[in-house]
Length: 267
Length: 267
Image (cartoon, rainbow over all chains, first blue to last red):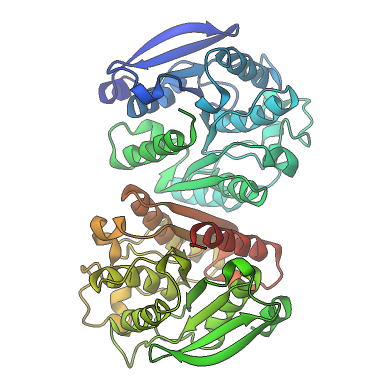
């Protein structure tokens, strides 16, 4: 995270929004004029168990810096202490509070791994609770089509030299007791829910065990008539982009992410 | 090809356009009103050696049918009898002749494998010969970043159970003696040439040995500021889409292709 701060200097302010703990990240160089009325919500990865703090900042700092935009990193409730849909509730609380300050179309939501899954789950949660659709969604190294497995688990095992230890969601404590056939947990089971998604960007790498989830979810969104984009970094693994400050491929990926939000968020 | 005709009934008329042999494919159900002033050029695959006739029709018939649009499948010159840039010349001859009938922005060009490579090479050829940019480009199971190899050659070998026999381009007779560092042969070497590409769709499968070429080329186009889209079918190999008439994944891919051209070609 300090390495990201060296590339993209930011201020980090721990705070509470909608009763939920967050970090508010502001670029030291200032927020760009066009972003004055925009904000990004970042949902960290960590298998719904870990990732608060440094994990979230690793994902939030670079996009705040490259976009010159305010970013809110959410410390949503996780397992094993908490159960689905606690994290969806927390994202909704933060989002609802931000809606008092920002138009929905000016709010972007992105997350990596568990955070990407949670972002997609939150879209369905918002639908159920009559919250307006945000302007754009980023789902990185993740998908929402959990009932399939896919080539990428084998590819990642071979190319990374270690077995992919990703558990399927029902094996994660956070989802204990959840109905995984409910679109609130598995958005892909409902084409109607998918059809109401905002424009979405998927990002993954050829050695990410969740590449297949990304690909399959991208295809399902397109099939549901949603604007969806896919970007894959050759040779990179799960979440690698957040561990490579200043590396060309990471900067390229960040530019793709920011360009996506910049062209899809309201102004 | 007869199986495609069963799904998408068409008429096929061998003809010559700009002095080059072509097949003109017209849907029996008629050309859609919005496509009266549009045409698609299809460049068949076949390693710059084979693929004329049935190969081209396998790719041209389904898109003509699903799009309700006229398609011209080009019998471009190949090796070993002919050498680069004979095929680029032939594509340009057909394109120039069609420009007398259609505005450039109403003409789409797509190709699979060698045809996808050729389509990209043709973009640079057009630039050099002052032909206007077409409305949209489809590069399927191919790319134009040939100096790299990529994960997908290994992935394809493992998942398909046979070694990927794809030669690198300089090993193909058609490219004998060509300067592969010239953007006319390898568009990726010139970001300036890439920046003038039309909106482009890449399509591949997780078991396609050219998936990495697709991914890398997509990334390069985005980096050059071009609108680029990527679609990957989980578990499919090189050109599989053309061998699966009526199969859901093929229909999904065809819908993505047609939706791309429909939203990017002029009307």
